[in-house]
Image 1 (cartoon, rainbow, N blue to C red):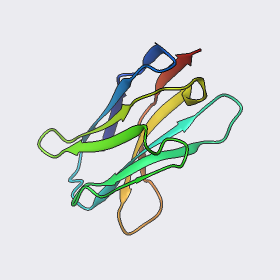
Image 2: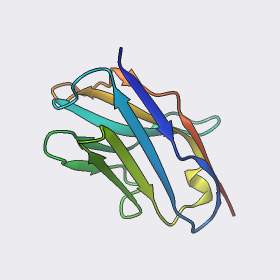
Image 3: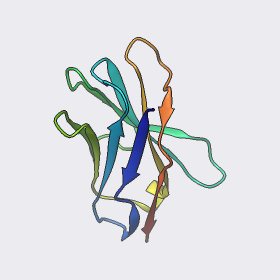
Image 4: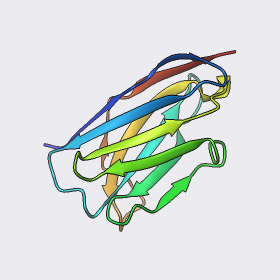
Length: 119
C-alpha cells in the first residue's frame, strides 16, 4: 500500500523559510514523478513543484520559481520542498503526490500539511 506522509508545516512570518518533507513508501518510485501541490481556502489546488525520481529533473510553478526548491533523497525515499522568502500568499495546505512519469496524472496523495505565513 502506497503511503505519502508530509511533515514540516507550521506558522512562520513573512520572509522566513520552511522545509517540508514527504516520506514515500509502499512501492518502487524509480519511474515516478513526485509533486507538491497546495490549496488555500476558497481557491483551487495549485501546482507548486515536481521532480522526476530517476534523474532529478525539476519543474516549478511560476508563483514559487526562484523561492522554492524541490529535491529527493533516493536512499531515504523522501522528497523535500525548501521554501524561502515565504509570503502570506503561500499560506495553504501543502500536499505531496506521486504519479508515473508517462502520465500527467498523480495517482497517490498525502494527507497534507498546513503552512501559514503571517505578515
